[in-house]
Amino acid sequence: MRFIRDNLMNADRKIIGRKVMKVMNVLQDMQPDQQLAVAASLFILTIRKFKENPTEVLSATDNMMHEATGLTPEFKAAQMYFDYEF
Image (cartoon, rainbow, N blue to C red; front, side):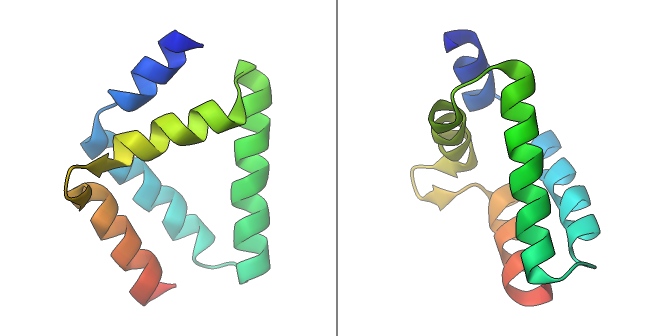
């Protein structure tokens, strides 16, 4: 599990940010309850596939998304997209 955690925390934020925006584009056309259900289902299926601890994955990903001053620019843009376009 340490390998996955280290890889998540050191993932290329620019690539991940672009992929997040692509998924958000798909979710945007859905109702809010569907958006949440799709995102949560995808997370659960992915966790099961890789046999990872959900808490560890969420924690490592949250760390990857942040820098000392808050969200990294890539994820700040994604948050703004959520706030103003959804």
